[in-house]
Length: 289
Length: 229
View 1 (cartoon, rainbow over the protein chains, first blue to last red):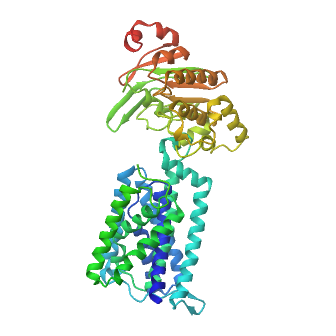
View 2: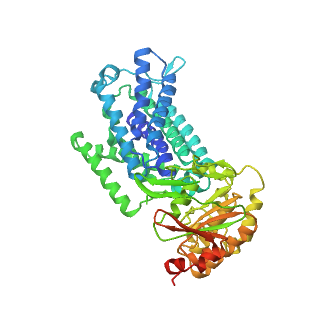
View 3: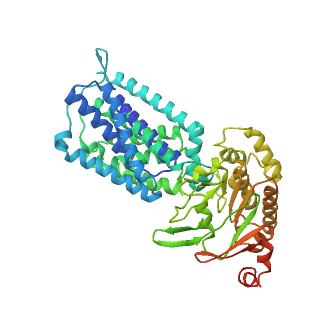
């Protein structure tokens, strides 16, 4: 039972990541490949604050999300003028840089040794020790994220995002400051990715750079594309499916040395199959052109 | 008003000077790659100026971003229409009116639809399923709803059936009569010069002739070069 709840928590954290990336990729049409870097910043910010300064995870969560947001702005500001593939490469590079820093800045992050013993969240004096309690906690954040992202994409602001996705020149010609909208989207997306990272850090209580490799960004990207770009329901479907499906491999009795590469192969195979047969995802309304 | 635009280090247009008086239709014609569209894009701020200055209503617009032109009263009908294909006709028009804070937008949308009856029947349809001509009308409508003083039209007849070319040019005259100045870039030189009060003829990288529209049609050089003898 605890195992099942654990999987659901991890899936929940991925749902938040997927929703936030969907805002950038699915709704605005910006190919961003470094999304896990924002989660990395969120996780390390709140982890380091809690361990080195004894600061409550609650404040760490907020600081982590804001730090991720800030770096969302820092990466978006110079690279937003890039189009298509070039933006993808720039964000990919950003993902690699953040990963390398977390791995090599030993004084701050302890590098590959990771940060053990990160405290859990607690309500007043009640620590969120039981798994079910943390699941409810994560659910609250999923509801919060869904609510905000839904409000964003359903607003006039969201319609401008879709207009940018459809045709940037047209959006310019009707008097939209396209770059400002794109930067805002990165800032919002990074904020929620930061929350996801912080939730992860305080749940697992141990973080190391291997959780934030570029492959993870690709996995989140796959969840967005699989579920459907530009669809909130799609993000749920994508994240749940792609977290739970590989877990099934365990029941086949495969050793983890086989299961891990097999997971990558399944992801890769799925992506190819999807692009061929259903490029808009399971319930999406948009595909890359 | 002498402006120059470079793409990187490549000179696109240099020492180009033109003006549009209030209430005028001005046509820019010339061969492919002469820089007509570049000049138009420069007016709308979509390409940065290398040198020179542009004035609108007496104040400089050289340093403005594209989106800052619309509130001033300059609207663009982009080349190739550039509609939002997955949105309906109405939604496309609403997008055009997005930045307007004053006035009755609903009524204005109805006015635009009255102006283009063929769109009125298809108001709930997606822009992507319209014919090319209808799409061009919609692109025109989307710019008009911003109530521009100066309308920039980039190749509005491109890819249209002959019937719709006539419709578009009729509409441009109608719009102009209602008080909007128009700067028109066109491949269809004869049609453009027929409706324009004045015209500029581009050669590669600059302007080599300016005259009244009907004078240019009669001009032997222009005739042999662009009007097919």
